[in-house]
Amino acid sequence: SAASDVYKRQIYGSTFFMLTGFHGFRVMMGGIMLAIMLARSVFAGHFEVHDHFGFEAASWYWHFVDVVWVMLFLFVYIL
Image (tube, rainbow, N blue to C red; front, top):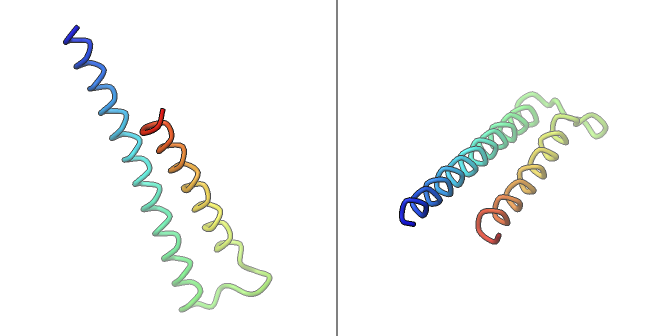
């Protein structure tokens, strides 16, 4: 029925914008982390050859965001 189709479209739209909003927030947080790592590296000299955990953690976080983006693309657009 027409009411059922409208309900399905509303669920899809709500889910789509919620997922992309959360993903956008994660990307923004990753950008902030990279900016902090750049400032720590350039202005404070906090990273050494064997002491760079903050940068490595930000790098792993970006890998997480990449995986989330691939899953979001797969579930929202492909399936």
